[in-house]
Image 1: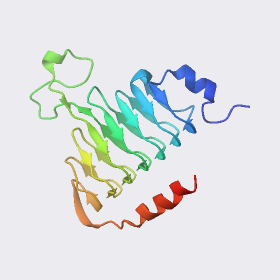
Image 2 (image 1 turned 45 degrees about the horizontal axis):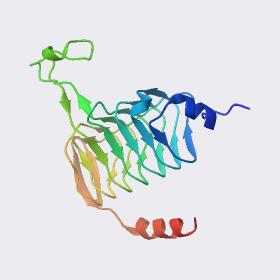
Image 3 (image 1 turned 90 degrees about the horizontal axis):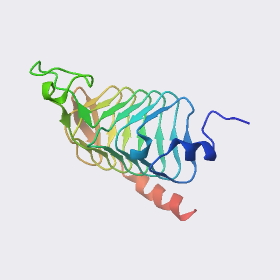
Image 4 (image 1 turned 135 degrees about the vertical axis):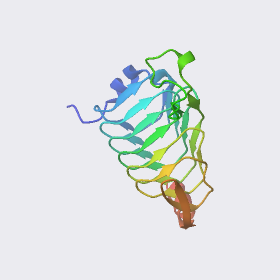
Length: 187
C-alpha cells in the first residue's frame, strides 16, 4: 500500500548522500542534487517542498509544506530539533538585485554577481510561516523567528525575532532544554 511518503526502498532509489531512521519525505516534494543532501533521524519533509544544493539536516526536524531550501554550493545546515513552518524559503545563494549584473541561472556567470554563504539554523530554532532567510546567515540556538519575517543578517541565540528585516523583540524561554533531556532519556 502506497502512503503519501516515500517507502524505505524508494528513499534508497532517490540517491541521497545519507539518511537516517524514520525519514518521511512526501512523494510531492522535489529534490535536486540528492547526492548533496544528508538527512538525520526522525525528519519529516511535507508536500511541495523543494530541496536543492548542499543541504545537511540533523535529527528531529520538520519542514512544513511549500518550503524551499536552495543551498547552492555554500549550503544550508539545519541542526537538531529545528522547524520550518509552511512557505519558508532559505537561500544559500542569491542573485544581485542592484541592477549592476544580470540575474538568473540561465546566464553565464561572467554576467552575474551571485552572493553565496552558508545558512546555519542552530538547534531548537523555529522559523515562522512565510519567512525568508538570505545567504550567509546564522540563526542562533533557540531562536524563534515570527511569521513573515526577513532574516538578512545573523541573529543571536535565544531571542524572539520578528519583522522585515527581523529585530529581536524579547528573550525566548529555555525550558525546552529540560524537555529535550527528558525526551532523550526516555529513548
